[in-house]
Length: 194
Image: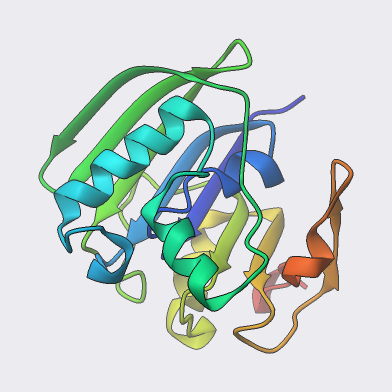
């Protein structure tokens, strides 16, 4: 199976979803403006600690975000993956790099903290096979030129449909009915690739 690169725009602390939707993920890039609503004490430091905790446990069951979400949405599924081994975690110049081993494979996460994804993307982001926006407010017109230069010809796009108009069809992932979450997945068809 070919290595897969995922770009998640506006992830907050939803670190496990990309690993569930793309089990062959080897590189995960994240561009995210910090939102204090996804941190127990309103700080980036606390959010980063929780992300590491979720990764180390392979579950978001005890996460602050899940607890808050459960207050507004009665049925908030617990997200779980096989328990990975975190090999390293380093932050330098607002770029957080996490190396981990999951199911015997090395995986790499690069999070560009406090960065607006509507502005030019870091050069390292390229050959993206899967683009995820989930619940982020996303203006396609503002990022289309970035996307066009950085995604592969068969890139998939994922979004949570309850926030925005439905794009594509609902899917079932490994026996789990994702359609209850109204997750849409479709191929990206860009102007100069049609």
